[in-house]
Image 1 (cartoon, helix red, strand yellow):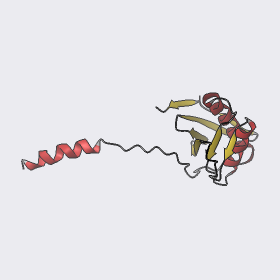
Image 2 (tube, one colour):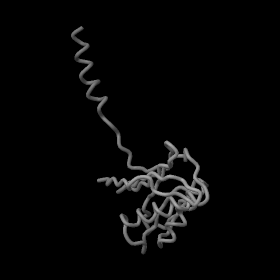
Image 3 (cartoon, rainbow, N blue to C red):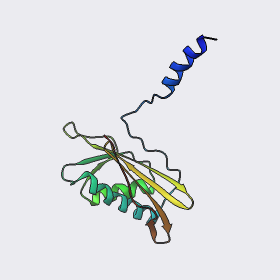
Image 4 (cartoon, one colour):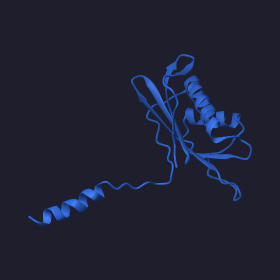
Length: 145
């Protein structure tokens, strides 16, 4: 019986530990956004991301392309802002790409979108409309240290 507390304390301490990975992943889209909705959301989120990551110039963004309309629209929106977007993993040796991941989810008839980089994550809810989508929440910004 005296061994039980001796085992319980280390176990409780270890349960509070977390492992943090330094990688970004794009989760499979749980909600499919297409056409004008994908373009409207990608355009808005790209413009918000640009506000936080700075000038395009020589910046290359690396993202996974899953074949969805949103991925295509996001790539086009970022290129429209002057960024080079790499989706095939081929980057020259002297260029260090800026990694970008995204997630799309749905709740209560809204589309929840999150863009993540190693330094910042942006999130926002959108309400799909016949003409595209309108923001349904303020922009959420989380800085990574």
